[in-house]
Amino acid sequence: MPRTLRDAKLDTRAARLRLKARREPYWRSLSEGVAIGYRRGAKGGTWIGRHYSAEHGRRYLALATADDVADADGVHVLSFAQAQEGVRSWLRDLARQDAGEVESGPYSVSDALDDYVADYKRRGGKAADRLTWTINAHIRPALGDMLVAKLTRTRIEAWLDGVAAKAPRGRTKKGKHQKYLEMPKTEEGRRRRRSTANRVLTVLKAALNLAYQRRRAPSREAWDAVKPFREADAAKVRYLSDDEARRLVNACPEDLRKLVTAALLTGARYGELAALMAADFDAASGTLHVSRSKGGKPRHIPLTDEGGRFFARAAADKNRGDLLFTRSAGGAWGRAHQFRPLKQACAAAKIKPWIGFHALRHTYASRLAMKGVSMAVIAAALGHADQRISERFYAHMAPSYIADTVRTALGTTGLVPVDNVMPFGATR
Image (tube, rainbow, N blue to C red; front, side, top):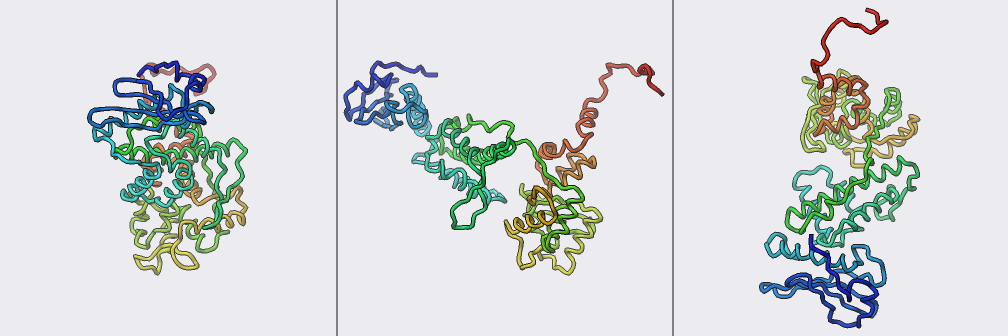
C-alpha cells in the first residue's frame, strides 16, 4: 500500500490557512508524473490531482473540498491523507481507461440503473414494474446524480442507513404527494425496515456490478465493502389456520373468493393465478401448469381431489385460451386489484392482523410442512430455485425435520457395539 506523504505546508488546516490565497495550486509530488495540489481560496481550499505522461500530457481532477473549515467526512471534505488516496484511486481509473478497460465519459448511478432495468427486461425478468418502483423510490433520488466512479463506501453506507431509518411509504394516488406511514417503534418493525434496506441494496449492487462488467466502472471496491444489516432477514411467516382460511374464503366477494381458494389449494402467487388460462388445468393428470413464474421457469402443481374439483368447475364452459379467473367488473386481475377487497374480507372474517395475498402461499406451504412433507417436495411445488429457500421459511414447522435429517445423514459410526444392555429400571 503506498505510503502517505507528509508536507509541512499541507498537513494541517492551520498550516494551510497561513498560505497566501492564489489561483495556482500549491503542489506536492507523490511520484513521477503525479502530484496533489491545494488551491487556497478566499473561503477555504480545494484538492486537485495532476498526472503527466508523454502520451496524454497533463490531466487534472478536482477532488473535493479541503478540511479547512469543516471536518473531513471522506466524501465531500477530505484531509491531506484522504486526498492523496483520492489521487491514487484516480490514477487507477486512468490506467484502466488508457488500457481500454473502462469506457470514457461521465457515467452516473442513474445511467447504471437504467442499463440494469433494460438488461433485466431483455433477460425476461417478470417484475420489471416492481424493480423500477424500488429504484425510483429508494435509490435514484439519493444517489442517481452521483458518478459511479465517485461512489465511496462511506457514501453508500450513509444512504443505506437512511433507507432503514425512513418511514414506510403509504399507498398514494398517482400524481399526489407521497404519503408515509408512522415509523415503527417495535424491534420487529425496525427489523423489517432494515430488511427492506437490504433488499434495495441488492438492487443497487446488481446495477453497479453490471456497470463494472460493461467497463463503465473502474472498480467494485466501494460497494463490495458495504455489508447488509445483520439479522434483519429472519423468516417471519404469517399463515392461516384451517378455520381462518374457511372464514376468509366465506367473507370474500365471489370473484376474489375463487382467487383466494385457488391460492390456498396451490400455493401459487397472485400474478401466476391472474395469468392462468383454462388450458393450464389438466384434468387427466390432476395438475395445474404455471407457465409464467417469478423465476422464469414453468412448473406443474399437483392437485388434490378437492383441488381438481375446484379447477374443473372454474374451467367449465371456458375456451382453452380464456382466462381462468376474471374480475366481476370484467377483465383480468391487475397488479393491485386484490389489495383493498382482501383487506376488507380480512376485517369481515375477523382476521387480525390482516394479511396480504402472499400469506395464502405461506399457508399452503406451512400445511405441507406440518404434515411432514419433505422440503424438496415443498420447494418443487412452490417453484423455488433452491431448496434452502423452503428450509429457511418452513423447516421449523416440521417438528421432525431436523432430527430426521441429522439421523439420516449421520448414520451409524460403528463406535458403539450392538448388545442387549438396558438402562437400569428400563422395561422390555
